Image (tube, rainbow, N blue to C red; front, side):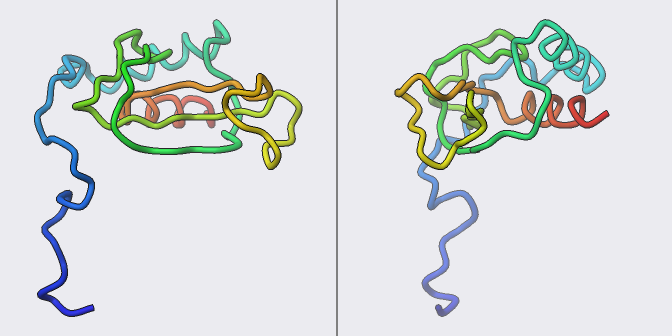
Length: 115
């Protein structure tokens, strides 16, 4: 690959850099508290995900902050196998719990689940 074939950072994702997520103003401590509540209330598991995907949001509500992850935002789709066997499972077959999470919310959850 030559320098002339490299695109600028973020261009290859074809994702808008427009930011609409109001929780950007939320302090890390508040976001981590919300993540703790999501874990304690079992809205999110307290273990390592079996699969993790990233991409533009699909409009699903984030289990950490409750706000939808819009198409203008990046999300993580976090998957947990209900039977502990993720290799043969698909998101729509009922054997996976699937969560759509803002990137910042995922980071707070990941920190809190390992505390």
